[in-house]
Image (cartoon, rainbow, N blue to C red):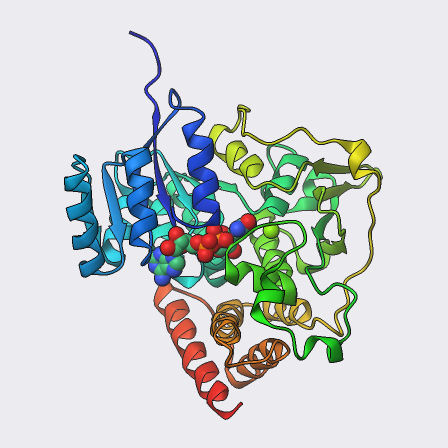
Length: 396
Ligand code: NAD
Ligand code: MG
């Protein structure tokens, strides 16, 4: 028979917000996709549930004890899923020959090695884990080109820009008549607040995003605008753009997901309801289009689209990220590591909201930029920045 076999998919970070949306889209198209592997950090109950529904060949958790627990439950449920543990097991499912597509949806630096492994294996890589690209920029893009991987951005802004650019856009935007990328930002839950107002905000306030429901780390990043800073760096690498070719536009409705401006004055935008299943479905099916479970956009209920410049005085993270990108080398990895430490401390109640950009700023100042020649240098910069940030945190 000539029916194409379903493509195998590994979902790294299957129990998270992006992971769940990915499994939702996959389940709508059983004739196209089959789950090869699902991974999670410690949420074993949630991963058990995912395994029951999606029946992967392999499941991965971080710890041996959790893996043993999951193995036992799966056997009891009559499933023969192989269960493995630890970072090496993540790398294995990312490069497994049974996986045609790898969704990179682990949060933070922990996603770097498995995502790179998928790239090096020449997979179709759906990139949600922006931290991996921010840390390793040049090296990552180089690996994509060298190993013939297909990299499709899942971050809604980058997915939008990808859709607004010509199919062939490598080698510098100006060669394709593109004058600027317009990166939209919701402004987060504290848009319009002053620095003084921000000092006392709580983790729950910061995680109550007006338009998107997301994991807690990216929710805090959206509230500080560090998310937009990381996305600016991400856009530079994905689209061969200089930082000055990326303009951040605050657009509170989150209906325009980003835009590309052309030399002739045209601006092309991608619009849609704020639902990550749209970019996920785009990445899975590209260059085709499939149903994603997302409601059609109702422009009459949207009614209006507003735009304003970002407030970099109240929210200095955007400027810090732009400076780190301009500094180059290991600076973005340092920025990312310090931010991960700061956000974790904020969520744990050990650091105030405005302490986040202060900690990132002083960590960047304390560490000399090195050229990011290889993975070891990047991982060392990451570890070094974590030590410095934790030490500064102790003095806070
Ligand atoms: P989340 O916290 O909801 O889920 C994270 C997933 O990664 C979980 O499955 C968790 O078990 C796993 N994980 C966490 N730490 C890990 C570790 N140390 N080792 C292995 N696995 C680990 O996060 P999310 O909101 O789904 O975001 C995932 C990534 O996608 C982030 O990089 C985020 O910036 C990016 N992203 C998310 C959204 C969104 O709407 N949620 C939008 C754009 C980009
Ligand atoms: Mg985004």
